[in-house]
Length: 189
Ligand SMILES: [Cu+2]
Image 1 (cartoon, protein in one colour):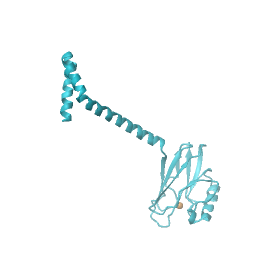
Image 2: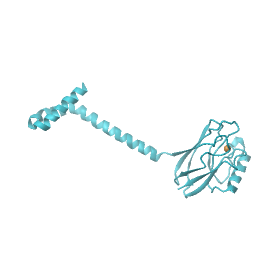
Image 3: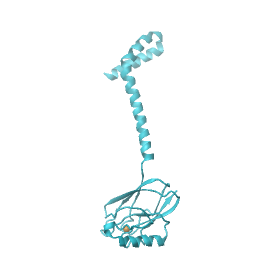
Image 4: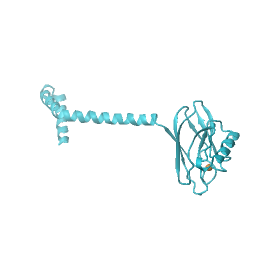
């Protein structure tokens, strides 16, 4: 029904352009009845697709960016030993614990300090003292943000704002025994 109207309307419009004056009367009739629905449908579907593309653009630009990291198999190491993020930006850091060995529990403790061994050690040892009830995350001034501990198969995340100064910042797993080898570098640009 609607299609037939559309077709006949197109016919009228074609005649309008070809015949000119003869088509004028028929053309104005069509735009009064068929044109109301046709134009409405046409313009609204156009603006819908436009606003949809705008919305998806805004959500990818305005929402938190996601960074996902994993362990390196069943080793006390991160698979992603560095990632790059813009300064002063909200980031959702996701850690997917894809290890299978039950002893491979991990977290990600982001530091507001450079990736130096002395800082990894200080935060790592403080984390062990903080204990399981605190997810091994120490109350330490070098801690920028941290995930909870994840068991194999679990995914944890933390949302934080990156430092405003560009540079290299460390992250470390503070599960007991892991800090010495399970380290990475967040590059802030
Ligand atoms: Cu670990």
